[in-house]
Length: 102
Image (tube, rainbow, N blue to C red; front, side):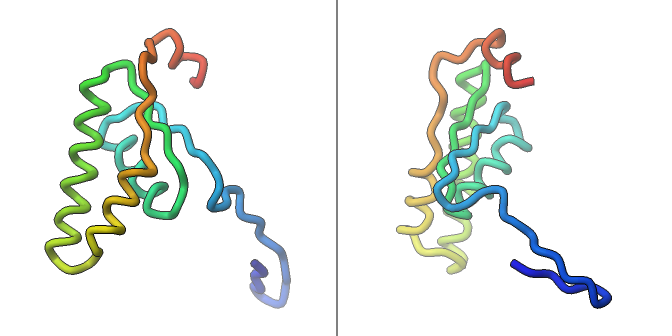
């Protein structure tokens, strides 16, 4: 992509392409939102949290959000299913292992 601003031309390189795998540590509201946006943009996502219940709440919230989009006609069910399928939950991650990402 090339950006021209006030006559100065520069190139901007995308950090992530469609084949990127994005790891999200923390499955709270912010982590779930990041995971959803990344998956909606075609990225595979690995969602990690020390609390497995938090991971499940995040997936449930993402599914609910996408279902609302389907009901309102903003998205078709096949797209919603594909988005959810791009999100994987990291299993057996302890708090000690998560600190390696900090």
